[in-house]
Structures are given as structure tokens and as C-alpha cells.
Length: 93
Image (tube, rainbow, N blue to C red; front, side, top):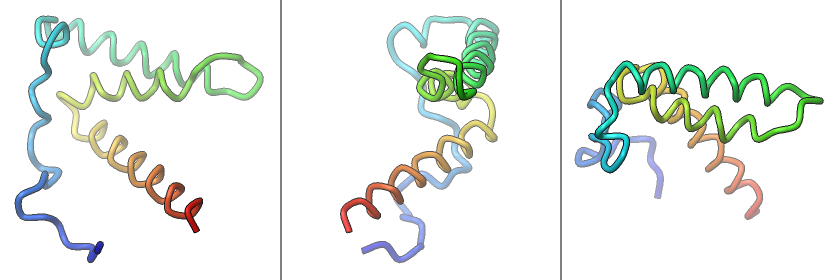
């Protein structure tokens, strides 16, 4: 049951993002930042109605890269997860 309380064992939002594994772990930080912002802005451009392309998934990839360094990106991802969960609950009835 959801009570609105934070799990004492779960992430608090104030913690740093988990260290990435694989290819992302080996990329230098400036490359990750530039790639994250490029993906974020490219996704925003593709999300404009009338322009074909997977805008939102590309924006999410950019936010994932940026969330390693920026708290605002982690907050946007958390908000997006909450919205997806809200829509799923609403569809279930």
C-alpha cells in the first residue's frame, strides 16, 4: 500500500545516481554531458507535433546521461516515472 512515506531503505532523491556500468562508465564526463544535452534538445525538437521521430525516448536517454551529474535531471525522470505509473493505475481501473 502506498502511504506517501519514503522508504527508509530506498533512494531519498538526495543521493547520487548509481554509477553506470558498461560503455557509459568508460566515457569521459564531458562526452556524457555533451551527448546528454544533444540528445535532450534533439528529442525536444522531434517531440514537436508534425515532426516525425521518437522524441520522448530520445529525451529520456539524454536525461539519463545528465542525471548522473544534475539533480534537476533526476527530478524530471522521477516526475516522468510518477506520471507513467499514474497513467498505468488509471488504465487498470
